[in-house]
Image (cartoon, rainbow, N blue to C red; front, side, top):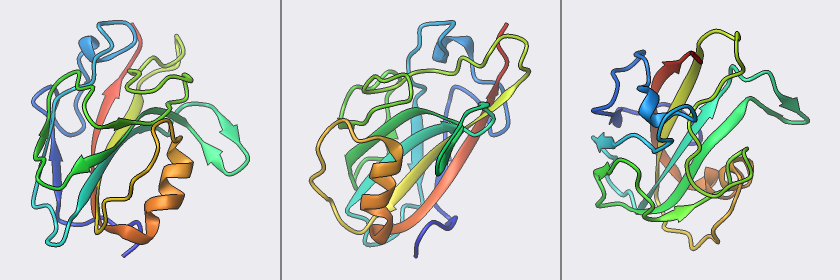
Length: 158
């Protein structure tokens, strides 16, 4: 299937689609990941991955753009929600250089940024080491993507 939207749904009790991400989930607050819930996961799913990416960040490197805030994988297919601040599953490396979640923190005076939280359903449960960056993870899982969808929130540094 490759990287195409599916009917799978991703929601959060912390913010609505297109809504503001609460300060609690940002670098200005407690910096904990928001709770997320998945539904309509495709048949045949063996594992899930979650990422958070800010395409509005003014960063471009060869072949990459924006800023990666979260890379999480090795999530069992039976999982339908992630708790707030979860440290379960396999953490990848974000663009802060840390493993796990690093909340929104756009440059001061930069206006609102859009944060794309993605869930990807995979037809395999690959044994991947911790610490993969987003681009390496996507390279390894792309042949296994059954479906994906996103939840977009916004944050403006205040």
